[in-house]
Image (cartoon, rainbow, N blue to C red; front, side, top):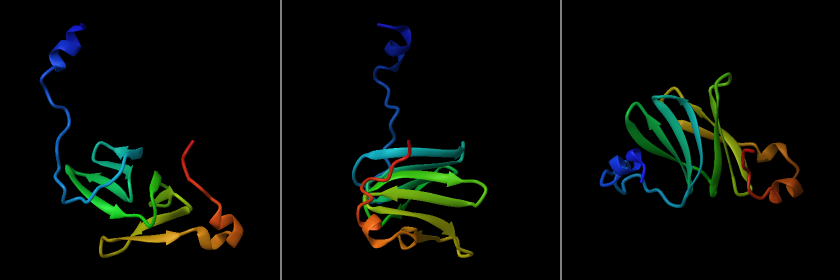
Length: 117
């Protein structure tokens, strides 16, 4: 057994944050802006870590990927037959805009899982 592994035994590196975040499902993607802002694509939510605290932002379907676009200050998100972006309003609340309206109806209904590659 390696010395590092031996030191890790008996220590929990996972912190429980309780059920107040209403999280479900696996984490499919992680996107990092810096040490103080990280996004996780988790179930039907974007789990947002900001300055030491977590919050959940709902997504319309099963979420698969998140991406922070620094130049537009948008958070792009993709899931099962859904693709769009969030912008933060003056109130501080995120507003979601679906991009499916830009696609024809046949393409929009057959997207499947949207994932980053």
